[in-house]
Length: 191
Image (cartoon, rainbow, N blue to C red; front, top):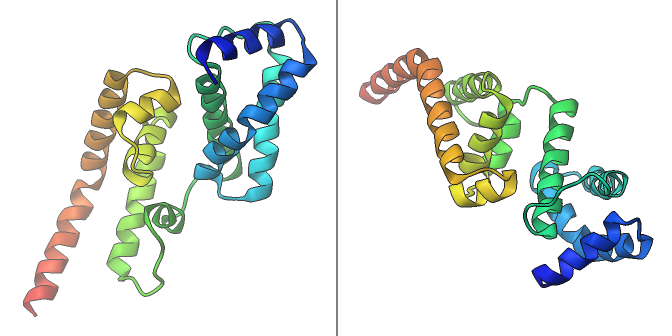
């Protein structure tokens, strides 16, 4: 859809046109669902959250100021809905959850690796919410800084600053543990 067409559609919606809402729902539901599914991974929850995005769009139609494309705005709403759901449903992720994002969990992994994963989760949960979200999008979802900026509606420079803050915090929080783990690995290798 062209930007101009989506602008006209948005104008119709902001005036309370229910047909415009139906068109927006039809056009963007799949995109919203996929955006949420990247984080939530539960079909029923994703459907509910996607519908909630459109309900919020309808309820706030008179006050919302769109400064980007309609699709970009709705996709950003989807991202925030998914993050809100994750914060409410499991405020503390386990190492298994983060391993799943990183490519799967193998029950035969070394105890040391599991301990490290737990320490990483604890360190991540200590980050401010936006900083944590940016780190997860970058490191676990493989998004570029530009993509993260678009998803979260922030500048690339802000993404860079938040990633720098996250990495610095993680280095400090994990420093002692990583040194012990490194020594353990060296001793294990030599024996």
